[in-house]
Image 1: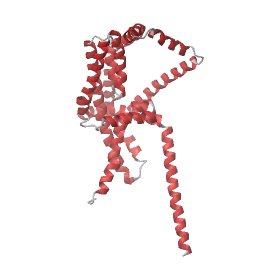
Image 2: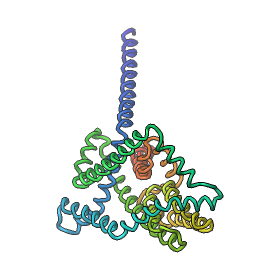
Image 3: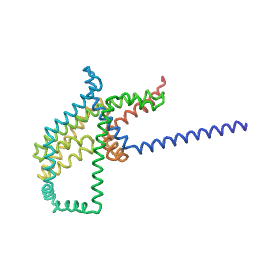
Image 4: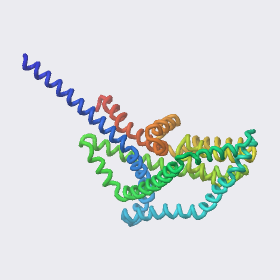
Length: 347
């Protein structure tokens, strides 16, 4: 009897020790992931680039005798030609209009102040800038800004290069990731990766189409309303539309401010234009996009922006929507599907 009690005592101690080790391992893993969160976000951004390049390279490889490397080279070349063509046709004009906005900023602020009944608005903004520049840590601020710009350029280059490597041989990286899992859940994880990649592909292509539509309609509407620098403002609206909910608001702010310098009536028309564009995107464009991609309700999109932004900062906000797409697919495959299978009496 005493031996049985001792065996039970040792068995309970072993279970407690095993549970403690599992908790400690999970805590250490979460700490490592948190420490490497910036690197993991860059990896995720690289995967998005790889998906974009693969979306072009796959049909080329399928319809031509080109091997994977040649199809990917054509894909990269087509993207580079598109960007170069865009910059050649519109880049100079957009840059000129943005420079014009900065050069006309004092006059715009004065006109805006007159419309709002705020005296010396230009002087107030100038004084704030002079106060910032006259602080003793100006050189530190400048150095920090320079480092930030350098870091952004370096990160962008890293994402592009890594994305090309991922797209060149995706199976190698996929199989390498799956080798980290035991045999039993490996098939389910692999299926989740495949479905996540497909959902991200549809979302990314659809989002680029939506950004193009919003940018074009913004330019057209602002031109018809007689707002200055309509092309630059339309470009800003299209780029900021990549981030749902928050992006369109930031994209509309400069257009509304410039419209105020024309007249309050024009500003109201511009506000109405951007509201209309968001209705078109939300009720027409996005439903068409989400037919094949994951359906993201507006509330879930908003909370994903808040959550990932609070946890991961600006990069979390920028990548919140595709991260939410992957999270939904993973939840359905790894949790909901498992619960459904376990509740099925025939399984």
